[in-house]
Image (cartoon, rainbow, N blue to C red; front, side, top):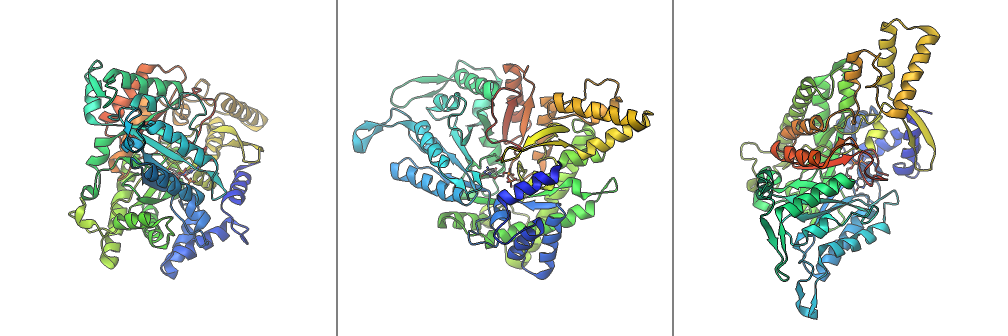
Amino acid sequence: MNTSTITDNILSARYLRKGEKTFEDICHRVASALASDEKDRELFYEAMTSLRFLPNSPTLMNAGTEIGQLSACFTLPVPDSIPGIFDAMKQGAVIHKTGGGTGYNFSHIRAEGSPVRSTDGVASGPVSFMKAFNAATDVIKQGGRRRGANMGILNVWHPDILSFITSKKEEGSISNFNISVMVNDEFMTLVRDRKFDEIWIKHPVTGVKVTVGEIWNGIVDGIWKNGEPGVLFYDEINRHNPTPGLGDIDITNPCGEQPLLPFESCVLGSINLAACINEGKFDEELLDDTVRMAVRFLNNVIDANVYPIPEIEEATKKTRKIGLGVMGVHDALLMLKIPYDSPGGRKWCGEIMHRITETAVEESQLLAEKLGTFPEWEKSTWKERKVRNAAMTTVAPTGTISLLAGCSSGIEPVFSFAYTRMNTVGKTFFIVSPVFKEALHSTLSEKGHSGDELKKREEEVIAHVHDTGSIQDLEWLPADFRSLFKTALDISYRDHIEMQAVFQKYVHASISKTINMPNSAERKDCEEALLAAWTLGLKGITIYRTGSRDSVVLSLGNSE
Ligand code: CDP
């Protein structure tokens, strides 16, 4: 069994529409629905069929169909009133139904124990409402194809912050949410200076006080125990808010790559960097052409999109943000023989991402010359340049589309070069990374192995990788081969963070990435990682310690 068998399965389950039989049929439908002219239709079709560029799942599923909802990312405001809260729940349900994911910041909801004037009662607080949102998500499958994903955020200055942090302590509770604490520089400075006894918040009614240390330890403990909460950096997000005139940003979509204003939505699309390599050389011109095509593609989605509610259409069209990202980054590095966790790897990635963002801005400028700037351009930070889109680049998880493209997901290092994957109907497949297989073959041949002996050695290594996930302990393999083929767990968490920081430097929005830690990592490693993330200018961080959860809810490569 090989990757294409899995791909077929994903396709039939997720993307094929009535009358469609092949991936080309899907690309034909999508390109025809989105291109403004014949030339672009051909370019869109070619980029998708060659797996060099793919839009997010809702576009592949719904473009050119009656549903017509094409975006993956939505953020909804949750006001402090019963009708307002249930309006948000209803809006979320409508979005899930069409394949989108929703982010909410629950901080406007008054704290548990606060008075409710109309009923003379007391408020139940944001966490209890989150459970209601979670239950609503359970009953709606996204477009009948996947379960809805949510992000639940609480600001660190909300009085219920401790119960929020521990709300997912029980494995399986609030399972349709990723949760994140929105911290600010003031809080992080106190942590950095180890002012743990300082009172951080006082409950407005009960007077209960919470210290910096209680919150910080709660966050660190939660991460160490089961990878949550994630942490978002409010000030860093807002230092890069492209439209401060429209308000501050305190919400992101479910996987964190899109910090957005309330009611904004964003369509994502990702370029497979591995598909830009020809005969061992990275083709920069091909990348530039792909970026330009992708900006036009995603910009057209904004106009072709069928929006679930009018407020979303209005907010989205004011800023016209698009989310162009990358996938196959580790594959590309392997093909170019550059280790992921090396200065050279970071340099290459920084240069490529810089190039992508600059080219995307240039193309958006061309679009602005023809069609005008995004309507709220004057309230934006784009003083020097007239652009069609307030933000252009991001890094999505690419959980499903990277499987479709057969490449490594987003900017993540490969998890294992040989593994067994179970598809949605429970069939298992044994998969070996083709880049690894080829390199192993030539390395062993160079070492003088041949014939049956070579085959036996290859099988031995692949079985070892399948069982243990790593080749680092096979000391008889050449050192340069071992240092190139490191996996997500072989790479230190500091190198994970540094790679995220390199991309963040050039990405307009944010980045979805998991910082992997070995099972033996301690709480102090989690603390150090969080502080490093803040210092290095990340907008958010997700940490996962191997084996700390029985099942991973919604993370990379696991978006079914
Ligand atoms: O690969 P694909 O286009 O399917 O999606 P992704 O890159 O893994 O995720 C992009 C975004 O889609 C996430 O950040 C969520 O906003 C949304 N999503 C969702 O709503 N439901 C899922 N099961 C997976 C992703």
